Length: 329
Image (cartoon, rainbow, N blue to C red; front, side):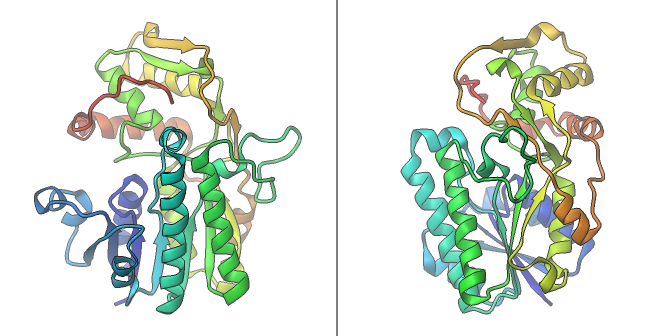
């Protein structure tokens, strides 16, 4: 049975990819994530799927635990990282060290053990703000505006170097702003939902004018499954954006959630401040559409409706996390 190793497999994106692959393939799925007590680990939704799930506790800076997880894997999907832009502003060195060295260790271990395909999760944040008149496709200049984004640039350039230097079968993906089930409320959409359900105000930093490309995580999971088995000459050594190509402002997302949850618009509190964030981030995904004949299956309106309904059915998921007083997004 072929094994797919998913690093960070207990996180938001990892959980959704694990569940998608479990439903749609026959792979054995190994998960690399930080150690958890059995009482918590056994309750995680991916650990309840069945006997094709394996768990490898480890640390991104511990090469022995990485080797144990990679050995015997045919594919590696590398998601594990510190992903919070605010955290990277507070402790840039720790975030950079973890994200860059963790990627280096997984690449080298995967090369050593003959992994057949390595999917490196980069981020749309590597592009920074769109240059006027330039489409944000894969050739857009890389201009990170936070230390987190800079760490993702370093990771995906290192992955590209492994392809060039060793002909190691790397595929780099740059998803845009993912949303969906199991996302924690330190991210925008679940935070907005949690606060609106409780009828607490939500702050729209920079007036909510930041414009982004929001894509359902289930669409990303589908693309990942296709990339695992696409012809090597079509995808290895390549970078692929994964986005909708449609732009929405943070304010318009908040307004849709207000309508879906039937809450008063007075809960929206625009704030003019100087929070560091990308202000105009919308992707062009023509390359992956051409190679995989893919297009997003879900509009943002439908995706927000389904996501909101999921969180309303699983309010315990949101309520297990402390609501942050700091509303910087």
